[in-house]
Image (cartoon, rainbow, N blue to C red; front, side, top):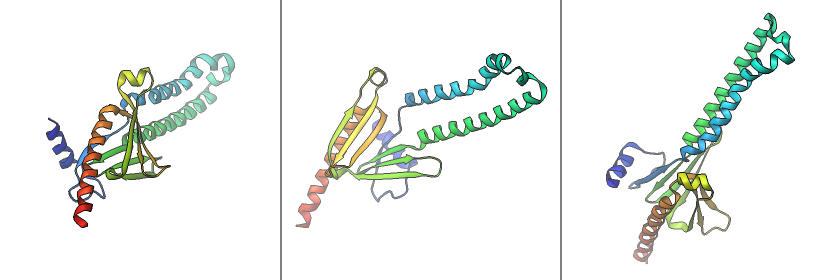
Amino acid sequence: MKNSYQKKLNVFYRFPGQREGEEIKMILRKHKITLISFFLYMIFLAFLPVVFYILIAPEVLPALMGKPYNDIFVLSASVYYGFLWIILFMGWSDYYLDIWIITNERLLDVEQKGIFHRIVSELDLKRVQDITSNVSGAIPTFFEFGNIDIQTAAEMNKFRMKNIPHPVTVRREITELCRVAQEKNRWVFKEEE
């Protein structure tokens, strides 16, 4: 089953800068449960004009219920909902376009910052020294999502994968890929001497 999944990944997914012979092992996104707080906040914001118009406006601003001001309220509510759609689109695209690609040679972090700003970081697996997975809290434990921190030889550089599903399993697979890459790298240096 895993081999068929690996074949589908390498047939259907390619990315710019993919090296010759580089195979995609995993493509990860944040856990879907992390979207719930964003959607609840958006639902709260969507109901604000309705609550204002039904409950608050008749008591505080009774003139708003009249003809000229009612049209102004409808126009301003329409602009408000337009901005909510834009925020919803940006939140969804931030979730969908933030990915981690793990290949047999390296780890790529593609982070979308706004609509026209993207940051791509890359880490060779042979340079990895320490991998830590962290699941803390009741909700992350129940839904099995957490963070993975990957430390390289540099003191300050830490590669962080936030809110990914099954972090312990992913950490084990990355550790195995790192071991294979480091073993392969060790043989390359021996052949050159």
